[in-house]
Length: 156
Image 1 (spheres, one colour):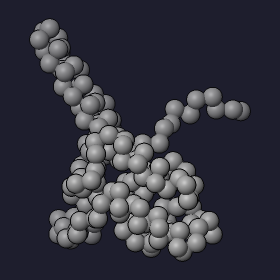
Image 2: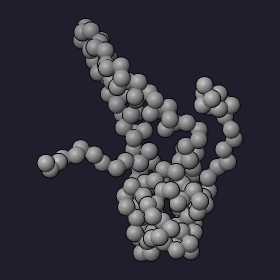
Image 3: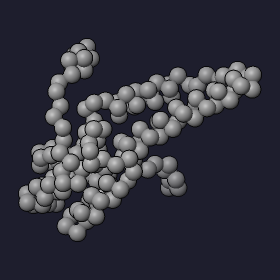
């Protein structure tokens, strides 16, 4: 059996967050339209709303590397810029590129799990060069201080 349309697309964290925010605005507009027309506001599936809420919380969490990055742009230009910088020297899949964009590794150890077979595909020099390009284009990561509330949630 052949899948004709998988219905999947690789998205950056920013694109997912933007989709969730647009979906919330759409729900708000639909509710206001129904109220103004004197109709009942229909409830939305609880599991869908819970999924939106959880993903939005996760993507807005202060530990996300792109949120307070002065080099981060709200469009895809930073992804294209990184891809163009890396392309002449290394060939990455879309998924690998988005992993680098979303997680913004600042050292080789952080980068290794993001690129499949990185140690066999690229020399140590190339791996360090990839990290340098990520930091150069996407900026230095900000220091993360432990969140005691998050630690309590993880323990429980």
